[in-house]
Length: 451
Image 1 (cartoon, one colour):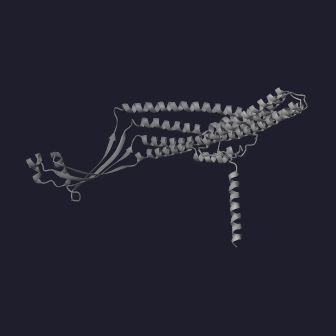
Image 2: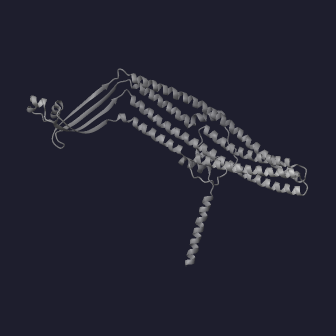
Image 3: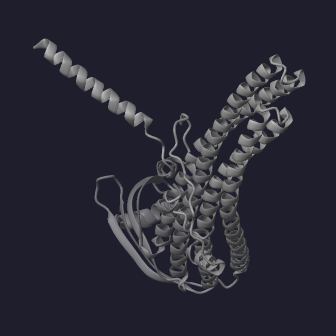
């Protein structure tokens, strides 16, 4: 029975370890990298904090509409004649004896325990508060749009870094293959030299070629480490270990007319939307600065209880009123209005510049995608031609009809064609991602279509 239990436990452990190993071998997909970046990148946290700040500012802008109520508990003692006279009146303890000349001039010290409630309410401020509330709401929307722009930029950075790792891995594979080929070539040339079919200079050329291929492999491995560091940075993680990535295969991405892409960008770019909303918010700030020249009407009230002791009896009184305030020398308000107008002009210029920049980015991305798509086709054909050329030259060299220089030149061409092909493949995917970003449509779902 014990042996059966042990076998069952062993099977369970083996199954669990096998599942864990299988899970560990699962490649990191582009979508997973993007999701981790959007959850961990510090830029996302900063953008979220900006949203919270704007939301708090919007709530703060509404507080002037609410009444204000304060509570005060005051304890005092003194023999100042005016203080004593007024305190006795407020406490309701004034007597005939307090009219004595000596009592008025040299009163006995008296204490006062005061409980006070006072409040105020802004009834009208020439619509300044309403304009500030509207402006704060627009600023809140602008912060949300800015956060969307940050998210799209992070997605683009992850796509670029992810594809750079894939390309660096391809370079390492090519470099290792070329190093192995160079080793095989060195062995073959050495055999030819020993058989009298090649000269010593051919052997030296093969040795130099092998050394160069080793340097290429070392450089490619260093480039791969740098690419992983860039991916960690884009994802906002510190301890992402190099692992297998899900490959991005060659795609034929859809292409649309440039004018349609420009119209899409004008409508969908979150940074343009944020600037437009900020522009509207600043217009409201100018209106609020103008309203500040108008009259303000507020109501106020005060209730107070004065006692000679903390818990003893005393008197109470209240005052209520309405106040009209009009600044007849608004020098400072004129300067505030001038600053608000200058800020409005600045953001108007920023929006115009941003629109021009977006048009340029869309045009560049449109042309880059067209060029990248053509490059893939050209590189694919060049790779096949270079491979066939290398095969022919290698056969000719083995037959003694070509020199080692011809063979090395053919190998360089084949190696360069492979590098160009994968650069074109990943460059095509990057170009499409940059076009989506330029048009404001680079969402995680859209980026997932690259893989």
